[in-house]
Image (spheres, rainbow, N blue to C red):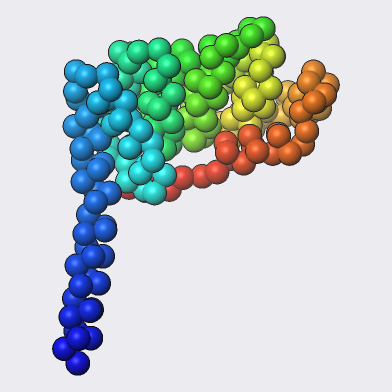
Length: 202
């Protein structure tokens, strides 16, 4: 009997420790965002991006992530945008900053399409709370040659303003006509990523 009790106690201890590790990592991530060191802020955003997918989304991190978008070095904004995307409508205060990155998807080259895609995903997660972004998303859809950005803008509009999305017509055909090498499988991959819903009841 005692060996069984010992094993049960050990398993319980391991369970408690295992559950506590993510909470500690998230707490440290928030502290990292306050750091003056660029590398520390980047790791903080990465941890929040990862653990946020599993429901660990401290609201205290939102203003820090927003501030990080304006102060981080080029090439690391993606992690901040993806971390904000996990918050859904709770991150609506970040919309002005997020729109700046959506604009990077406009034009012939859309050289910063990773950031534009992450920004569009963040807006899509906000749903109707991001209606201020509709005019810009329509512009991006009409002007970009980056197919992931075009498809992402269309799907985001479906979630934010279905009426505006309906006026665009068949966006899948529009993408296929401009880029014949893009298959339905490619488009569905983008759609699945943008349409997935996060639990924002935290």
